[in-house]
Image (cartoon, rainbow, N blue to C red):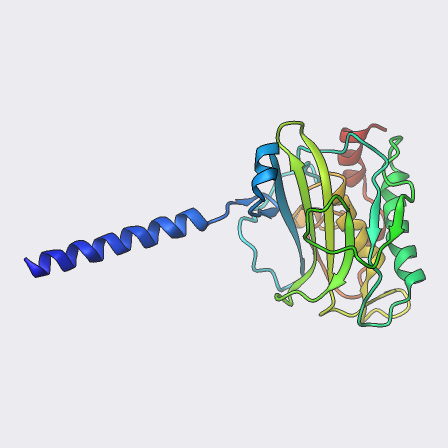
Length: 247
């Protein structure tokens, strides 16, 4: 009798453990990871997805099967209210000047703006030392900071409404494990304009691409120090952008 009780207790614990793990699991979408949301966001139909930008050779993400051409992929959500304002927190431990950071990021934003007739960013930025990554606060925040995985160059988090199919907010974090700067002057650096152009592609509604044949496009999901090719858009990036916002 005692042994039966012990067996039943053991089976119950196994079931509860399996159930709790299943309940905590967050699904991986194509190109990003979904995250838990506040109760108010759930009521509004708002969800969040994180796009992880990996250093070449350090990928440990899940769910990255090869994709067929074309070399762009849409999130399925876009901005209806424009231009998009964003806040830059220029605080960083590497001595990067405010003017350098602002120039690199605003130039990256203008790269997308110049490829469509829609007014996307149009230099609609502010310098905000309180801008914080990962907080749903009505700000589109761009900031520098440490990240626990040293294979991750940057993260773009996008909040969107499943009800209206609109993007409602984005944040970006640039991992200070890497040394940032201008790779045309020093190829040992992670080029800020290069990575920012990619991350702002997520901000306007483009997904990552991982197919090797598409490795030249701006939205290719891997990068490395010294790379500057993502500063400019390829035709596939432009095609994806214009399918959302027009020529």
